[in-house]
Length: 229
Image (tube, rainbow, N blue to C red):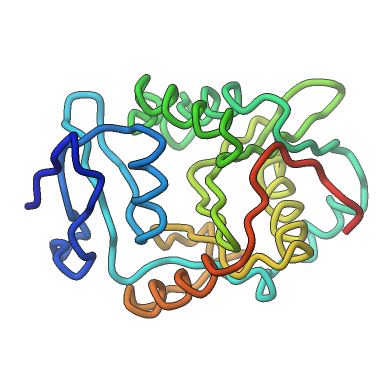
């Protein structure tokens, strides 16, 4: 396993990752290192009692915006307008809610450590990280957050307090990203949940090719707001 130097932002090539996708350990969560990691298809994921662990799994779960699938029941929810959606209005609160506890993670999402919360909030303040908020009767009931570089969005986590709240957030975000000419949404690990929206598993090498192409596009750094889509 490659051990990172705090004074060197470089990562090893992703083909050196373990079969599980673990590539490196250590370093820090400064904005420069996080952005360097994402540009190379690498992300941090670790528990409070572990050092910082950096991953690049193979295969990779990716949602191409033009392949978004929306079920008929979710389309009915979208048409009902029972939720209001915003972008980048309470990023830190979205991360806090994603940290749990949630029904599927009753003990909380321990990978969203205090250091992670501070690091991604800093990325948000610098205009690189973004959140989608779902509201019902002026109450925050769902949302998600991630990192955007060039034409790539790296989805990190989501939460819901009301049925379909996070699903609506994802669909609205994907449609907006499609309108902005984003090329891919990195879902990291494949799951039945993301597959319902059209996410697919592709080889890591193919993902890296798509990622490099997406990174050639101009980015949208700064605070986001929904446009008519």
